[in-house]
Picture 1 (spheres, rainbow over the protein chains, first blue to last red):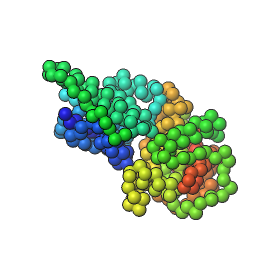
Picture 2 (cartoon, rainbow over the protein chains, first blue to last red):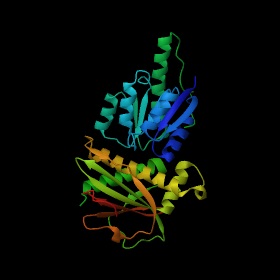
Picture 3 (cartoon, chains in turn cyan, yellow):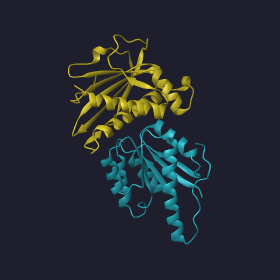
Picture 4 (cartoon, rainbow over the protein chains, first blue to last red):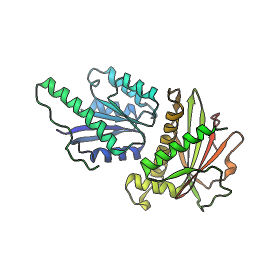
Length: 148
Length: 158
């Protein structure tokens, strides 16, 4: 099963690095989408199915926390897991986003293996939930071997 | 004045970001160099501030050669293929990570909000850019001195 992934970050450079990291992770990727802020990300979510969002917090126009609040308010979008990849590393900020419904949190700077670990964990949980709802057996999200 | 604890945490943040993301060692110098040892002519000037329970404005001057090395390794492209906009974007992110990491160390309760960094290519750097109330710091790297002007009152650009 291939997953559609959306990366939200105002830095072109960081989006490119996250994309490379995800492509090397062993997770099967369908569509790989990018947005430069939360507002642009919401527009993409309205247009196509996304399995998981990897988002920065500190962005112009609409930051990651406001983006998550909008996602959670929407009956259709609220089950899409949102993982934050952010420099904002205080425990208070992490607790805040988890309480708002974030599926995971990766601190910048990060090692590529950390992104894979969190991404695979979140996708496995989301996939297992979906398969349980459909009454099918779950399969692993990522191959055993990654390029890390 | 920036305290010794903050200096130690700034150094730890810079070392972690440059080491983990860019594989480039940097180290805060205990004393300012008497003169700029490199012949660097261009810098990527990157300003960022945080507000809230504490506030400060920070302005980094990344030597262009350091920025080119970092961006090339980060993006996986040849150094002569890197554009100014890629340099600016990469160094904005570097400043964002360093100060975000620093805040995670000195502000565990999350009382501060990090601003959006702004960057531009600028010609030369002189320690004279530091004004009254500013703290001038210098990091050593394999690609020249990385300068930082810290103002705990958040009083604008240098």
